[in-house]
Image (cartoon, rainbow, N blue to C red; front, side, top):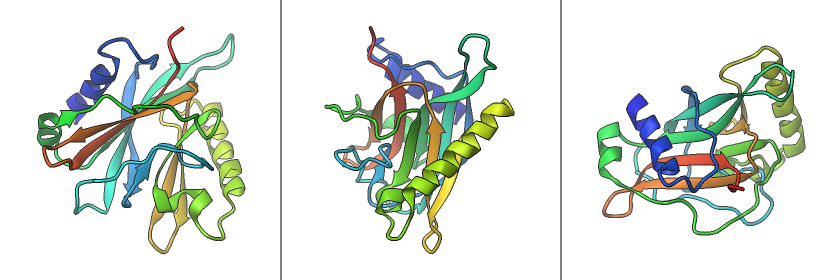
Length: 202
């Protein structure tokens, strides 16, 4: 799996087109409850990208996040995320697939300083009766505490639909833009997703 993760990094940065900070390490941060569509634009009120056509079978998928140390002035360094990979099949099958070039368009990120990965119906904004603002406050508390502890694997998971196991994963990011990539088999089945936070090159 490690080789696959770094291959995604090289795929995204192969032409130097994306201002993505190269991760320094990857860590498995848990599992995501899958749905018909998965989005890297959780907490967006309008216009966002989603990914369908996922490999049928698994109801959950492991999530690997690529972290790097970020430091401003004399402040302590904190872990930030620039890439997240969601494999839906074994690495050999993913490597054999066709890896696309990301979104053919642009949508602004939903939140400053955070990227949110979730199945579409498990977005805090889409769960009936859920207080998404309270969820966001809890996320900020968890991540701020992790920053204070110098946590290498800093993120927050919110269970948004306990009855179905639905969750949303929040990642601290520095970059303002988002992009997503698919590994596609010949019939269009998605066997892996990769997401990045980046800035447009100056």
